[in-house]
Length: 580
Image (cartoon, rainbow, N blue to C red; front, side):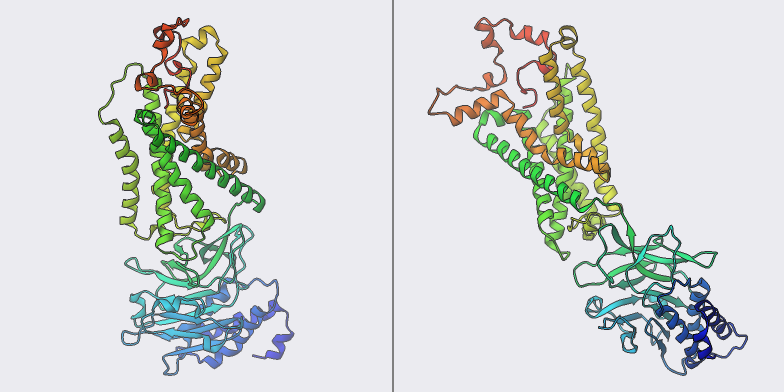
């Protein structure tokens, strides 16, 4: 090959000449192997083409020829052979049972170009120290059936992705070295085996991308594209470790960045501020509800208030975990990271379970006229609302103990906490929430229809009662957690703001209705706060539940019986005693 002539040729001509030379060496009718020196000239030209910043489409034919070098290379009695250039490297080794080839490692170096001392065939057992980014930038672990087989194994490593021009529709960006693995007469593994490729990211991904694994698919037109099928991305469990791509076949692999829709930084910051303010107000609200329960025995003895108190406890646990996830960044996957994710998962499910209980109780009180009280209501409600989430979390941990190892920052740029991902996220988080939201929405529609269809409002057109119906409906919306429906579509900016402005304030809204907006509870607080200024009004369990008899004795225009007849069941009193 005349190198001087090739340097004068156009890049397209030079590329075609390299393809012809490699094809004549690899597909020769001769059965003799080819020495490394015979490949050197063509390999130099490939390196030169990859080094030049040219808009040159490398055809798939050249990539196939480079993969085929391993089977034709003469090892000259050695265990392995290498051909290293600045932009491309070839490593070939012969495996057998006595001298297995367990994988390949590429050491971390100061220079961006490849050097001969950075490539090493792994023949011994690997430990976790080899997966540190300061030691290696790529580590390949082959399955045992391949490592100990009597086969020729070769690796072709590309410094960048200039040889891989994807179509315009394929928007994946390569974020690591590109590595091709070739095992003689093997393309896929048996018995569920996989090859693990550990990559060091070339850079931090932009906000609008997330990391994943990609393999190169050859197209009929000589080009190709990156695909994720057959590969699973496993993010490094802690900082300073390599990410893992676990694949079920052999081809060209790389860590790729896939596009994702995200909001602008300004919108994300605004949403975070709104959420934090809402969570803080919710925390304050549920704490004040708890103080009300502690101070006033008559309040906490009411069954409904016991239910709302349990709901407030679940909301308090949820907003606490959320604030921890926002302000504490877990760099490593450890007990604390897993604990926060587990508690957040549990508290989300528990909150929805108590919302469902609240919806069922409200439906029974406001819609069903004749109901029969079940025995041990609070015990049954507690067993369901606290026990069902515990069962879901326990099953998830028993099936997949590392289910909380996934970092949720791959889903949202502002999150960095451990949380279920993939199928676990759908089955253990989204599915139960969707079922309970559907039930709550159904009960809400039935209750609101019953309230607004009451004869008292239809006949008299009382505007005050209409306002009261609207206020009760507003309470039910927050009590049943219905704004969480916006969270299922929070990828839309408007719905994301609606979700942040409603769901995060849930605890505070419940406090406003159950304490501030309830006359009986306000009287309890006024008596407590003004004990030295005004005469204390005795509040007994009988006056707490019904004060209409005393009103009738004072000559009130309506008796309690008349009031119940003229008003709908849900609006029989002047406050929210049906709810608290």
